[in-house]
Amino acid sequence: MKIIHILFIAGALTLALLPVRAATPEPEPDALEMSIDDNLATPAVPNKARNYVRTAMDQLRRSLLKQGFDVVADRDGEVLEICVPCDRLFAANSTDLKTSGQQLLRPLGTLASDTRKYKIVIAVHADDTGDDQYADSITSARANAVDDYLWQLAGRRDTNTIPYGLGRDEPRVPNNSRHNREQNRRVEIYIVPDRGLLELAGVRRKQ
Image (cartoon, rainbow, N blue to C red; front, side, top):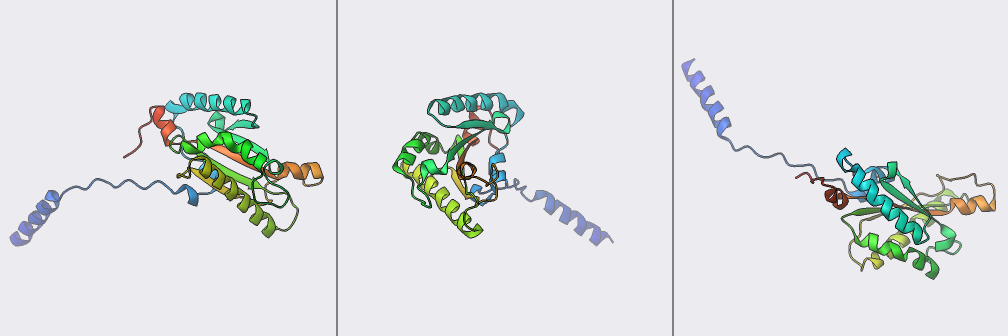
């Protein structure tokens, strides 16, 4: 019994002397693998940073309005949504940006370059013309075309942009007229505050 007791104490001392390893922080999720809803909700803005972030995003909203964009605030003023009819960016059935479409998007190049402060989510929608496969294909190709153009505007450097082709599953209005179909064919560009803006608001990044 004494030998067993001594061995137990020795084992306990050995465990106590082992170096304590710091917990490894979980890696941040890859934005390209997240759903659009998750990307629009991430990162969450802490309470202490909300006033700063909302003020900054409202100033950006006013600037974009002056540049002619149709822009509204979402997520209680923390996220901006720009909506552009597809017909202003693409010819019918085309996935190549028009020259006029490139000029329209050009002011967004500065935001695309600021990869720390903003995340840009691109969502392209179709009307009900054609089947699901066609709608999925053309919206994905158009989303990638916008993504590629923003990459060019950013000097062909890495950008914090995430493209989604959402097909025809989320119409704004019923597809029962030519006018309504034009409204449903749209590009939505969301500007989401990212880590750099939160750090400016005094939020320290977790190590």
